[in-house]
Length: 94
Image 1 (spheres, rainbow, N blue to C red):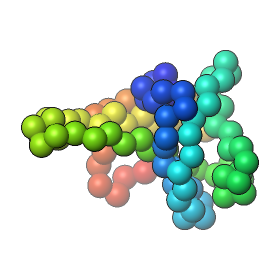
Image 2: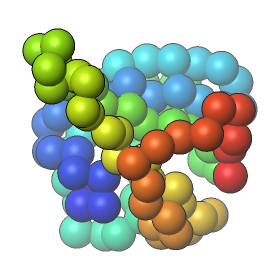
Image 3: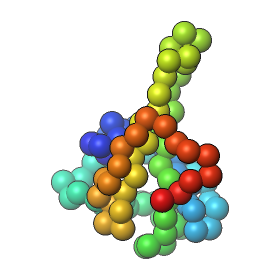
């Protein structure tokens, strides 16, 4: 969460790359680095080892939207940030 700037209790959308499930939930901070854990009903939508994309959204006025650049955090198999960019290349999943 620290690398992405996502805040505790922030609403996020999760996309499971393995099974195509898409759902909204909220974040809960932990002291352990690299932990992604689903609780409650959301836990039925992914399994340990699944690859997921976690997205947060914001509202902008037209001028803000013209200059906004997203923060994209790529992680390894231990969920350790390996690359942080402000763009995403179409069709590229690392």
